[in-house]
Image (cartoon, rainbow over all chains, first blue to last red; front, side):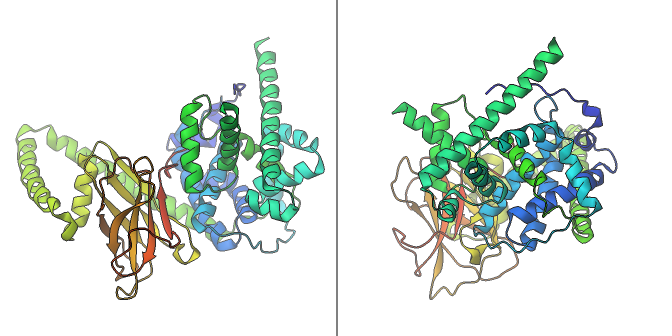
Length: 195
Length: 268
């Protein structure tokens, strides 16, 4: 459960500006992460109206939590995405219904590429991407349905025709494995910095 | 036995980080976390978030732009909240400066004491007295050192617009529901019934009284009126029942206000 230290300049962070109540910091936050959070909310929740409400809640929550951001514990994008996920799960709990995904169009444009670029630059996301790529296809699919698409374990069990217990065990095992890989990598970074 | 508990704890922590939890799961998770203090409530949040971003990065279909009207809504809602906070700070400053002058301080204290005494007299009969409920709720919030405050979550889509919270004090055996967005009921056909979950003392939820919704679009406040002494309330629920309510409900829960994870907590 120990975590490696992330060494980043807090002064460069939008969250730091937000915590210091700098003028325009909130707008910068929305500019920087608006497309990303909108996209994940659209994918995670079942329709546009719900995504609209959730995205507003996410940004207000990030604004209120900015003072708790600690770059030695998590990167800015990780902090933002943790709050976003927690809010999306809360939102799903409030609406308590699931899950008629509207068709999603392919809609890459320049702004979309900017969104990708935030994640591309995140070393943490890259580490996890590589680790997920090592998983068996079924494991990848299970994690995607659970974590990315917001299906419950019992829904996944029905969708994939796998016993519920197996779904739970596999998701748990895969998350633990991802965390071990991540922690190992972070500790290596710390060792290099301390050498 | 202990390893089974640990397995269950890990399962529940995964559920916590991946999907909405049921009230029972929440209660079980909190129990197990007390047994295993080396784990925390959000054990898998970081890794689940990173995995989420990883899948998102590799999804070619959905990287769309935040619509400008939604962006404006977000910016406006932040401005509104920000300006409210500004006025709160100003009022606090004013109060602080008043209390630097002893004469003002004494005058305000005496007035508050008189006002509070009257409100406490009313408060003793609060079950039958629906006057001044916001004030009574405020008094309970200010005077209880064991106050709990949970938001409502809807369990059925017909009640998805319902919002609000409950405040409750085990010591005072008093509490209030604040709620809006509930459909109007016909009291001759059905009534809303409040339930208090006190699992240590009672197997069944305890009847907390019935109420009616006569108007929509406004916050209403309802006193909770427990029929049995409550030792340690872990959650609250609302069902729809026959007029007058029932002793044990067989109806679906329409709203719940559980102990776990109040809206404001983020442990990062």
